[in-house]
Image (cartoon, rainbow, N blue to C red):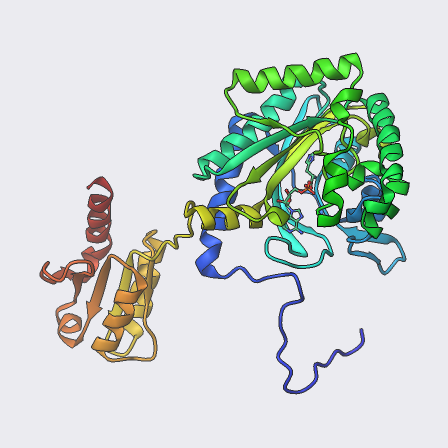
Length: 431
Ligand code: HAM
């Protein structure tokens, strides 16, 4: 490996478009993952952990004309010269795993983890971001589409988010979709002069992708485009009607948006997005998904249908901040040990408490009682255990309630401290 040097005096920072999540924030990331996992398990989904990189081939099946594949892939040759890519999403990896392991149908899985897309960074759009999602393989039942949509809706609601809408659409089966794409292509060709240059190019290769453009210049043409719902074959229309009926049965409010095509090419039938009104339109999709009939086959498997969604965790937290819900709360330690006789007492006491399952911390560098008590207060701990020379001589520790200045300090024999603390902490929980 070549030696890499950074120029002297230049501060090394994280790469553009990626971020550190610091301890004040990670608490809610962990809570989110645990809550999402519980929500999925409750509905019979098992967790899939797939690799963060795959052979590039896997992702090419997402559609070579999609920006995710053509412009945003972090691909590289490995040391054996194989073409690999960091995963930009999970559905393709899940389909690859499904083919590789031939599980019993239906295969209901959920996942959580980082994805990588080399996009232009902006608020809510990062080059490494996290998704939490589910996929079901092997069933083509419109009510399964509803179950999937409902799970995401229920989960977002459980975070406390209120300013949410659900948008749904149907792209129909392959025949309906191709027919619509052809008609749309004709319409876009007629109005090509009004489109942005980028969309003019896209229209030539994949007209549906133009509907996904966020560029202002394209919006009037998009608004006047024919609706894909007018091109649904009979069975595709029945599938969509059943999905809408199912949502009504569950009293989930939704808006039909015939321009919703999503950024990936594998969808047939249902497509949907959870949209936040609390965020600007460039980043207001908190998650999305849909039904896909051809992906497993395109990856070399049998023609097995799938349906799923992915939620964008980073963006969901922006919406939570804006709505002031699901805020990050760090869990402080329960006990803070203050040792003013050299630090060795705190060393053994913290070890003893941690072995007994009691969370605790301490101060360092033999600081004064006043300085250590200040750190103890700042730590958020409920109680301080203080050991000075008197306590050391009497083989006791002084227990002080840090939240109330009025409760007098109490001496507890050194060998009773674990039991005494457990009682105290249990009382706190039952109060
Ligand atoms: P997607 O719409 O590309 O769908 O991504 C899902 C969500 O991930 C988006 O709604 C957004 O919240 C978040 N997201 C996407 N790109 C970024 C980014 N650069 N920075 C921050 N957040 C981002 C999929 O990935 C499909 N695999 C969903 C699916 C599952 N369809 C069927 N099954």
